[in-house]
Image 1 (tube, rainbow, N blue to C red):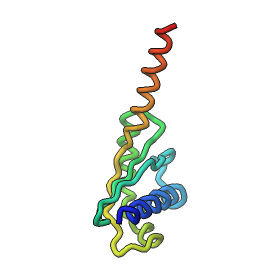
Image 2: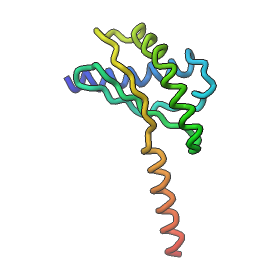
Image 3: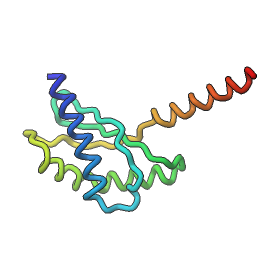
Image 4: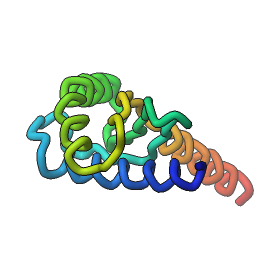
Length: 116
């Protein structure tokens, strides 16, 4: 069963990325990258993680509002593209791992500079 969940997660990630590029016309969502998908074991709820290039809080809020507004379209498109008994409810969350990785890189760079 876990293998199936992994396959469905990968397919949802590909399809949502494609839907955002080709079907959603919201200018707030330009530059959004889908970084990961977590699907519950019963296939009823999916959490989709995204990242954006901007670090401003206002941009993050705008992107979150745009994604929340386009949930219905994305879910309907997923229903047409993926063969599942029930299309899962979608929740979007910002992926903090990209920002955390940048912070670690910055700390390592400062450490190397202080050693010289």
